[in-house]
Image (cartoon, rainbow, N blue to C red):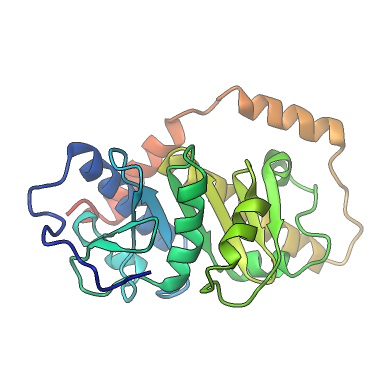
Length: 256
């Protein structure tokens, strides 16, 4: 991994394709929305999006900027081998971002966006031996698409990539035990939707368990029915379109 290899064509120089520009705008919006919902951990969590017309390249946040500072032109472009292609801010990238995101983008060509968080409730559920419980609509929506990955310390070792990819498999939601949450989507909107749903499921679980009463769990039949309904694409792009309108209201400079 070579973080010093920088292209002579920085983002915004006029050389990028319309597809890359669109990916940058959507990813920047996602960063601002994650900040709006309070899911960021200072500069230490990351969201990536594949560059649509470059199979081996993806965009990620500069390592040193808060999520509410991210704009389309500030995103760093990296290849799946960890080489920085464009670095407008000069901050480089978090090595953990490469280990996690580089591995998934290299292995899962169906995935356009990968979103990773360290929220208190996400960490709390990731530390519970039983994992995510079937106790809410949100949990029921995700349980059939959920995997777990064992904690191996800070994710900066290349050897972890193979195990991470194997644990995720073909699923879209991953709980990193004792660490946090990860979602992978065919679009930025899908990855964000998975994450907001997972975060809400975790919050509901922690609050319910803290009440100390016996939990009423959802049946396997109800979980199956929930997942079949969601598989019919009932919501589609409606949620992401609404979320983009929210981004325009709370952070109108994200597309700069």
